[in-house]
Amino acid sequence: MTRSTRRSGTRSLALAAAAAATLGLAACGGDDEGGSGSGATNLKVELTDAGCTPASMTAPAGKVRFEAVNNGTSKTTEVELKNSEGIILGERENLTPGLSGDFSLQLDPGEYVVYCAVPGDLDRKAGKLTVTGKPVTAEKPTDPALTEAVKGYDTYVQEQSDLLVTRAKGFAKALKAGDTEKAKDLFGPARMPFERIEPVAEAFGDLDPRIDARVNDVAEGDEWTGFHKIEQILWTKDTTKGTAELADQLVADTQELDRKIRSIDLQAAQLANGAVTLLNEVSAGKITGEEDRYSHTDLSDFQGNLEGSKKAFDLLKPALAARKEQALVDEIEPRFADVQKGLDEYKRDTPLGFALYDELTDADRKQFATQINALADPLSLVAGKVLE
Image 1 (spheres, rainbow, N blue to C red):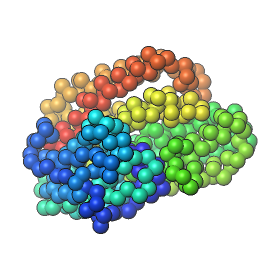
Image 2 (cartoon, rainbow, N blue to C red):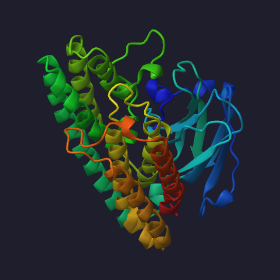
Image 3 (cartoon, rainbow, N blue to C red):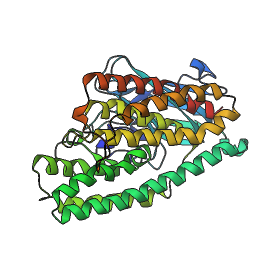
Image 4 (tube, rainbow, N blue to C red):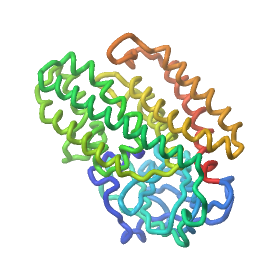
């Protein structure tokens, strides 16, 4: 999920409906507009310097497709939808000038927040979406395939969250023992479970930036904590000195994340939206080498994002098949395989399991980017299909 508001300390915590008039989101209703699928309402959003335009929108309960376009601003690159508890339901990020993106959700009646921002923006005001009508869950029978997909993904997320806590504790133990080399060896593996479930982890207020913020994602005056702060100390100073408190905080934050994950209520479209978000994480950050800029362990993160995306897709395949979308499945599966094949070439018999990122050539990076984009295009259609 978003790197803009998620990197600020106030990300996704508060509803800002009172400020809706100053932000702006335009709703363009209509079924099947832009090929969104049966019975969908399209909400069109333009990213501007101030956020999104215009101020507020409404939609009937049911399937809603958000379409966002950036016609030239560099001050707003992401859009996200949150529920009344501040949980992010869907988003599109890295919408630099000239790009567009969309996501689909099944929405019940209520008030929702629409937020558009860039990294480090703490003061951006939010817009409001009002959904009217009857709850869609009361009108439609539960789809067994989607129920199983959500159940399976919930189990997967909990398993990865538990593993994250275990590995964070091991990493912290090495840091507090002053074992610099062991801490370096554990850094990448400790992050892997987080990378697999990053879209879910990012949904919980400021927990994600506390765990995973990079230095340029931290607003002036804010405290920098988490994996990347520790990474900086380990690799630029070659010491564990100054990391003990950071290690304790990292463990506490992963434990808090683990508790909150157990109560999250997911829907099938979030699995599909999250699968695309994980690929965006790769194309926007991992592929440039900026994520793990001190350790150069980016390929491990890349693998985690890919595995998390593939897991969500695999769980949704039965629902796609039931909807006679086997052709889409057949298009997506070999593209996952292509990306994995490229990564496999850089696997190494080391604690990290991969070569360091600076071993990649410019041609390698370009090929990875091309493969990721080729996968993300058809994968972005899945959310709309499973809601039909």
